[in-house]
Image 1: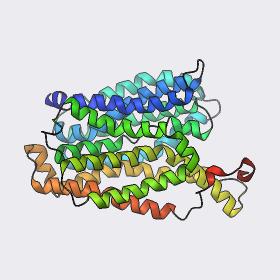
Image 2: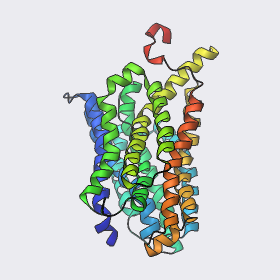
Image 3: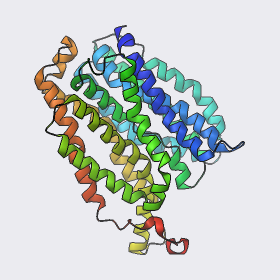
Image 4: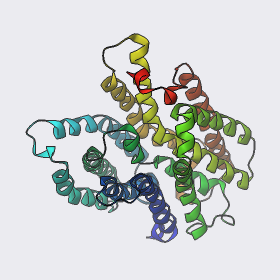
Length: 380
């Protein structure tokens, strides 16, 4: 198929670099010590992240542009996936933690489900009947199977890791869903003369968008320790807001490339810190309200209840907005109207502008600024 020739190179190279960033995070912590479990976790995370990068990078574009899933079926699939995505983690978590279950053995679970994970991943890319309702059913089944096996493998892998929050955060995957949006924006806003489709230059650009922010975070670990995850996260929200505001009125492709890198830094560098901030928030809530124990289960459940559905709603919302500018016609004709490029540009800039501003004002009220300098006895 044509998409293998045009899109395959940048997808695989970008995906490998994206996954390699997760591997680097684990290895940087382990310092390559023999018998250090973090090295094994990093290798396992590399494999999982590679598959997840391919999945998140490609599935929307492939099913809409190549398999031509009807819009109605795409919306149905994403809606069903939204509910499944919200319940499968606690469901499989319960099954793995249930006393006496064979899934208590994380290593055995990883070995047993690995073939099913690989099979479900391959199953996703074999079309059933392009352009028909049957392809919509294929999308639903593929999303359910892959996400189920991925959740089990990921949960088992991370459960084998260290129990402290900082080490756990070091093996969290990057926000590769961001790359799906970035690939569409690049295709519509950056001329082929600058980043030719299928070129090594485009592959490296996608790789820099994911690997660069992760390397910045790894090499500036002391900065994070010195200033705290909360301050770094708040700074990223400010940068997101200002970058969206400053670049909103430009259509220069080189400036758009600069903006996409800045936006990628704020997204991919902040994502690993978010769970740390949530943990700090739980500790802060205990002190504020003199609770006997933290509301960790409630907070993380509410976080999952919001975040997981958002992962399914976002592609539907983006496609719906772009369809108003002629995206459906672009898929069939491959000719991008000026209105579509303008709509994509405004959407690209407005997203960090709005979300960065909202996130800053929401988190501004929490007293977590000096959490990183508290003495152990002050945290008890």
